Image (cartoon, rainbow, N blue to C red; front, top):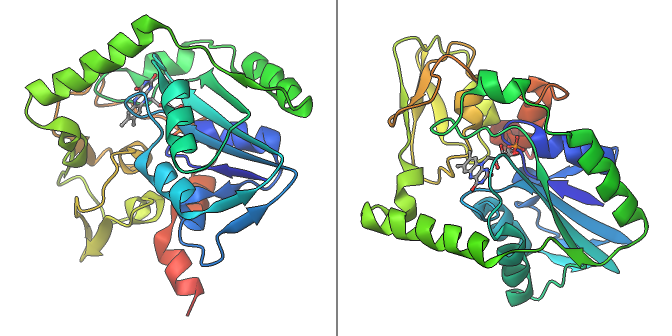
Length: 263
Ligand SMILES: Cc1cc2nc3c(=O)[nH]c(=O)nc-3n(C[C@H](O)[C@H](O)[C@H](O)COP(=O)(O)O)c2cc1C
């Protein structure tokens, strides 16, 4: 059994290599029956600020996993820092004992830091990394990706920087603006895992409450009408993993469909 969270498809691509029908965390976090039993249970998600996304932590915290082999795979684009160690510490604090935690270097979808045109062209040997991890998991290997003192220092400096700016993690919660280019296609309302968008007339409206800044909306907008309030490396370039369709991102994150399917 494999659970995933994705904004732009990298983590879903990995999850699909592990399991033909991986389960979306954005949907499963609402499960009323939240006890999961399987021979092995895996979590695949991106790294945000060297950590697992809050939505993933919430899902782990409210679920019970009955398995002989629990593993976590963290996709990232540039610097994983102490993410493996922080994920292990978080999991153990809530009674989960991962046997295996690894990181996978992929395209970096963080728009303030990276130009998506350039990211697309880099060969990060993703399939080789995934092949090695598939072999590890098939053998039920026990391993946690090593973290150095320098990795920990990078994370401390990152947190100190956020504190110095006085925003803390809040800097990640008020990032977007919607321009007049919006045509009200509604794609943002469907790819947002937190249901932060709705349409008013022919325009999309964003409510920052609950936003986890995953950037699924901004990457999926066909009109480039969702922008960051802070500078972007290339405002004309957006990203989606080349093996993943927009329909799969919608199916993963759509909260309107989930609510209506209960009626
Ligand atoms: C808000 C945010 C924070 C991020 N933080 C990091 C980070 O600390 N280190 C890193 O290497 N990549 C970081 N990334 C890049 C993603 O982890 C990476 O592109 C990931 O593979 C995206 O997965 P997805 O396509 O499944 O959403 C960040 C991306 C976002 C949107």
